[in-house]
Image (cartoon, rainbow, N blue to C red; front, side, top):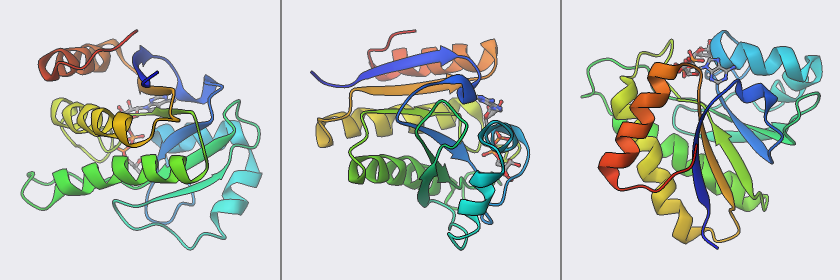
Length: 176
Ligand code: AR6
C-alpha cells in the first residue's frame, strides 16, 4: 500500500505519530511559532537533547525523542527565510522535506506530520511552500515503501484551503 497523504487542520503537538516535524532555527534551542509549541508540550528534556546536536544547517534535519509529546520523535528542520525567492529559498525548502524523509527512513518511521515549514515567521508564501511540500511527498512515496502516513498540518482554515488547492492542481490524492 502506498502512503496516504493527509491534509488536516489541527495543532501538530496533539498528534500521536512516529514523528512530528519542527520548523526550527539554526540553534535548535527553541523559539516561537510551532517550535515554541513543540518545546512547551515536550518539556525541558527536549531542549537538553537539542543542545547536544550542535545546531542544524538551513535545509538539513536532525531527530530527537518526543519526550512528553504524544509523537515518538521530533525531526527538527530549518527552513529558509524568504527574501524574494531568488536566493535559493525553493531549493533549501525542498531540501528540508527531502532530509526529513531521509531521516524518517533511516529510523524506520511509518508516519510523519509536517507543519508549513518556513511559511510563518520566515515569510515563505504559503502557496509556493505547499507545492514544494506536496511534491516532495509525492516523490517520497515510491522511494520509501515503509511509509504509511504523510500528514500536512495547517493551523488555520486559510492555510488548509491553500494546501487543498495545491494538491488538486498537482493531481495529488489526499484525505482530510
Ligand atoms: N501546529 C501546527 N502548525 C502550527 C502550530 C502548531 N501548534 N503553530 C504554528 N503553526 P513558524 P517558520 C504554523 O513561524 O516560518 C520559530 O521562532 C504557522 O501558522 O512556526 O519556519 C523558530 O524558532 C505557520 O503556518 O515557522 C524559527 O526561528 C507554520 O506553522 C522560526 O520561528 C510555520 O510557522 C521559523 O519560522
